[in-house]
View 1 (cartoon, rainbow, N blue to C red):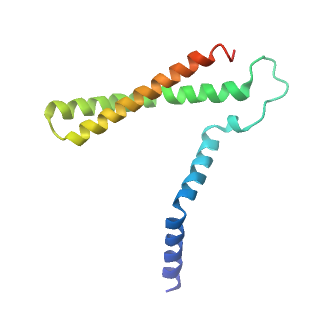
View 2 (cartoon, rainbow, N blue to C red; view 1 turned 90 degrees about the horizontal axis):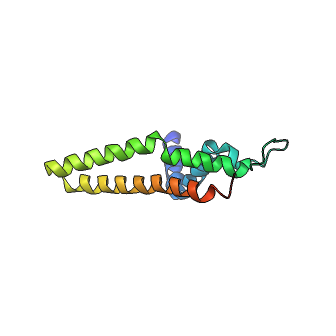
View 3 (cartoon, one colour; view 1 turned 60 degrees about the vertical axis):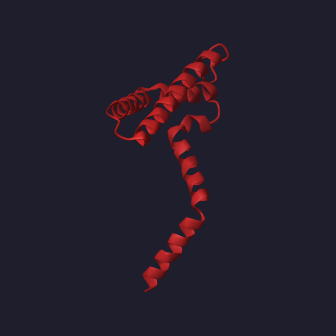
Length: 122
Protein backbone atom coordinates (compact mmCIF):
# COMPACT_ATOMS: atom_id res chain seq x y z
CA UNK A 1 0.00 0.00 0.00
CA UNK A 2 2.78 2.39 0.91
CA UNK A 3 4.68 1.63 -2.30
CA UNK A 4 1.62 2.39 -4.45
CA UNK A 5 1.27 5.77 -2.73
CA UNK A 6 4.92 6.53 -3.43
CA UNK A 7 4.55 5.51 -7.08
CA UNK A 8 1.48 7.72 -7.49
CA UNK A 9 3.25 10.70 -5.89
CA UNK A 10 6.33 10.17 -8.03
CA UNK A 11 4.20 9.90 -11.19
CA UNK A 12 2.31 13.08 -10.28
CA UNK A 13 5.59 14.91 -9.60
CA UNK A 14 7.04 13.84 -12.94
CA UNK A 15 3.89 14.90 -14.79
CA UNK A 16 3.76 18.31 -13.11
CA UNK A 17 7.46 19.06 -13.63
CA UNK A 18 8.10 17.43 -17.00
CA UNK A 19 9.22 20.64 -18.74
CA UNK A 20 11.65 21.56 -15.97
CA UNK A 21 13.05 18.04 -15.94
CA UNK A 22 13.39 18.15 -19.74
CA UNK A 23 15.36 21.42 -19.51
CA UNK A 24 17.65 19.95 -16.86
CA UNK A 25 18.17 16.83 -18.98
CA UNK A 26 19.02 18.93 -22.05
CA UNK A 27 21.47 21.05 -20.04
CA UNK A 28 23.22 17.94 -18.71
CA UNK A 29 23.32 16.47 -22.22
CA UNK A 30 24.81 19.71 -23.59
CA UNK A 31 27.54 19.65 -20.96
CA UNK A 32 28.22 15.99 -21.75
CA UNK A 33 28.38 16.61 -25.51
CA UNK A 34 30.29 19.89 -25.36
CA UNK A 35 32.54 19.71 -22.28
CA UNK A 36 35.07 22.13 -23.77
CA UNK A 37 32.54 24.88 -24.34
CA UNK A 38 31.85 25.33 -20.63
CA UNK A 39 35.47 25.83 -19.64
CA UNK A 40 37.55 28.98 -19.68
CA UNK A 41 40.43 29.64 -22.04
CA UNK A 42 43.42 27.50 -21.24
CA UNK A 43 46.54 29.36 -20.21
CA UNK A 44 49.87 28.49 -21.69
CA UNK A 45 48.69 27.65 -25.19
CA UNK A 46 51.28 28.18 -27.87
CA UNK A 47 48.96 28.92 -30.78
CA UNK A 48 47.06 32.15 -31.35
CA UNK A 49 43.62 30.59 -31.68
CA UNK A 50 40.99 31.00 -29.01
CA UNK A 51 40.09 27.43 -28.17
CA UNK A 52 36.93 28.44 -26.30
CA UNK A 53 35.53 29.67 -29.62
CA UNK A 54 37.10 27.29 -32.11
CA UNK A 55 36.55 23.96 -30.36
CA UNK A 56 32.76 24.27 -29.89
CA UNK A 57 32.34 25.58 -33.44
CA UNK A 58 34.36 22.76 -34.96
CA UNK A 59 32.59 20.19 -32.81
CA UNK A 60 29.17 21.56 -33.78
CA UNK A 61 30.18 21.55 -37.44
CA UNK A 62 31.33 17.94 -37.22
CA UNK A 63 28.06 16.95 -35.50
CA UNK A 64 25.95 18.73 -38.12
CA UNK A 65 27.87 17.58 -41.18
CA UNK A 66 29.17 14.19 -40.05
CA UNK A 67 28.18 10.75 -41.24
CA UNK A 68 25.13 10.42 -38.96
CA UNK A 69 23.14 13.37 -40.42
CA UNK A 70 24.08 12.28 -43.93
CA UNK A 71 22.83 8.76 -43.20
CA UNK A 72 19.57 10.08 -41.71
CA UNK A 73 18.95 12.29 -44.76
CA UNK A 74 19.74 9.40 -47.11
CA UNK A 75 17.38 7.04 -45.28
CA UNK A 76 14.67 9.71 -45.24
CA UNK A 77 15.07 10.35 -48.96
CA UNK A 78 14.96 6.63 -49.78
CA UNK A 79 11.90 6.06 -47.59
CA UNK A 80 10.10 9.06 -49.04
CA UNK A 81 10.91 8.12 -52.62
CA UNK A 82 9.80 4.54 -52.09
CA UNK A 83 6.52 5.50 -50.41
CA UNK A 84 5.83 8.10 -53.10
CA UNK A 85 6.64 5.69 -55.93
CA UNK A 86 4.55 2.88 -54.45
CA UNK A 87 1.81 5.29 -53.33
CA UNK A 88 1.75 3.64 -49.90
CA UNK A 89 0.89 6.38 -47.47
CA UNK A 90 0.89 10.15 -47.70
CA UNK A 91 2.09 10.69 -44.10
CA UNK A 92 5.31 8.76 -44.71
CA UNK A 93 6.09 10.95 -47.70
CA UNK A 94 5.40 14.14 -45.74
CA UNK A 95 7.58 13.01 -42.85
CA UNK A 96 10.37 11.96 -45.19
CA UNK A 97 10.25 15.35 -46.91
CA UNK A 98 10.55 17.06 -43.53
CA UNK A 99 13.52 14.87 -42.60
CA UNK A 100 15.27 15.58 -45.89
CA UNK A 101 14.51 19.30 -45.70
CA UNK A 102 15.67 19.64 -42.12
CA UNK A 103 18.78 17.59 -42.78
CA UNK A 104 19.70 19.66 -45.80
CA UNK A 105 19.25 22.86 -43.79
CA UNK A 106 21.49 21.46 -41.03
CA UNK A 107 24.16 20.39 -43.52
CA UNK A 108 23.97 23.75 -45.26
CA UNK A 109 24.10 25.64 -41.97
CA UNK A 110 27.32 23.88 -41.00
CA UNK A 111 28.91 24.91 -44.29
CA UNK A 112 27.61 28.46 -43.90
CA UNK A 113 28.97 28.79 -40.36
CA UNK A 114 32.38 27.46 -41.36
CA UNK A 115 32.57 29.85 -44.31
CA UNK A 116 31.43 32.91 -42.39
CA UNK A 117 33.57 32.33 -39.31
CA UNK A 118 36.61 31.15 -41.23
CA UNK A 119 38.02 34.64 -41.56
CA UNK A 120 37.03 35.65 -38.03
CA UNK A 121 38.65 32.73 -36.26
CA UNK A 122 42.03 31.64 -37.63
